[in-house]
Length: 477
Ligand SMILES: *Cc1c(COP(=O)(O)O)cnc(C)c1O
Image (cartoon, rainbow, N blue to C red; front, side, top):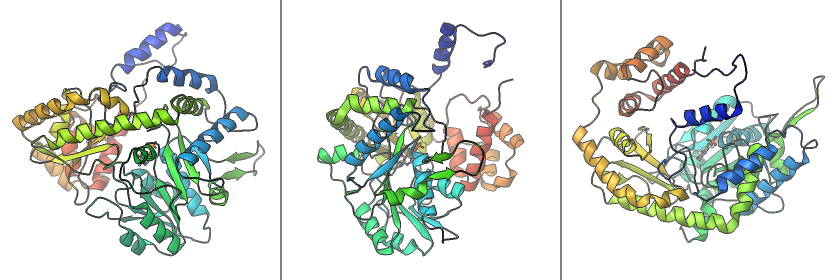
C-alpha cells in the first residue's frame, strides 16, 4: 500500500525509485510489442525532448490565455498544423483538448447547441463509431441513432441518409474506425449531410495524423478531410499518431461560426469571468508544450518516414496472419490496424498465449453479428520487432489448439445467460472476481474473463465492467 501522505516527507530519490518500481508492473510502453494504448515512434531522444518541454510548461494554466500567452501561441500553432494537414484553409479554426473523447464530446455539444430550437436532439453514427460518441450522447442527453455498417465494415451512406430526422444535429463518420481500421466513405456521407443541412463530424482521432502520410505514400484511401464538401468538423488525437505524450487532441471546425456554440462563458457569479473553449477550465500547459516539441522535432518529413515504417510493419503483420492456419484477417489492413478473427481457435486463449510470449494485443468482444476479433494498433516501433511476430503467432496458435477453448464453470455460464444488470451488486462482483482470480486487479490470463463477458449481453457486460472497476478503485487506507 502506498502512503500518499506520509507523516514526514520522503527524499526525492526514494520517491522516484518507488515510482519506477511501480511502473515495472505495467505493460511495456516501448519496444513494439504492445498493440494498443501506446503509440511509439522509437525515435532516439524524443521522450527526453517531450519530457523537458512538458516540464517547462507544466505549471502554466490554460484557464486564461491572456495571462499565459505562451499557451495561446502554442495552441494556435498546433491547431494551424492540424488544419494544414487536414485540408483546412484560412477559415479553419479549432481547439486543443485533452483527448479524443473530449474532442468528440465538444463536437456533439457544438452541434447540439447550434440548434437550440431542437428540444430532443439526435446524433447519427455508424455501428463502428468509437464508444466515445455513446458517452457524448449520454452526457449531453442527445439521442443516439446507430446505423449498422455494411458487410465491408464501412458506414452505409443510404442507411445513414434514412436515419437522419429533423432533430438530427450531427452525423459522424470514422477515418478510420478504431476496431477495424477501415475508412468510412466520407465523401458520400458528407454529401448526404449537405443535402439535409446537418453537421458532419469526421472522427480522425485515431488516424488523422497518419492517413495524410499514407495517402502521400500511395495508399488507396478515400478523401476524408476538409477537402470534402460538407465535412464541418474533424478530430485528431496528437497523443496517437503524432506521437505526443498523453493528453492532447485537436478539434477543428470548418469556420468560426461552427465553433462558437462549443464555447462556454459565464458571468453570473462574483468570481472571475469564465470563458472555456473546452471541458476543463484549469489545465496544464505540459501536454501542449510536449506535443509542440514533438511535432517540431519530427517535422513533416519525420512523420512521412514514420508512416512508411508503419505501413511496412502492417503489411508484415497482415502477411503473418494470412500465412497462419487458424486465424484470418477480419478487415482489410488498409491503414494502421491489423484485425484478425478466428478460423477454428479460441481467440481469447490465443490473446493470452500471445501475451505469454510478450505480444500484447487487444481482444474485441462479439458485437451484433460480428464475431470476436483481436485488434493490433501498429505504430512505427513495430518495425523493429515485426520479423519475430510470425513465428510467435504460429507458436501461440499451436499452443491455443493444444489447450482447447475456455471451459467456463457451468454456474458462471448460467450467470452470464440469466443475470440482469440490476442484479449486479458489489457482493456479486466480489464473488465473481474471486472465482476468476481477479481480486487484486493484477494482469493475468484473461481468457476466462473475456469468455464470460463475451457471453453476456451488452447491458450486463457494462454492469459487470463498472462493478469490477469499482471493486479495484478502493482507496488505500
Ligand atoms: C482513441 C479514439 C477516440 C477516443 O480518444 P481518447 O483519446 O482515448 O479519449 C475516439 N475515436 C477514435 C477513432 C479513437 O481511436
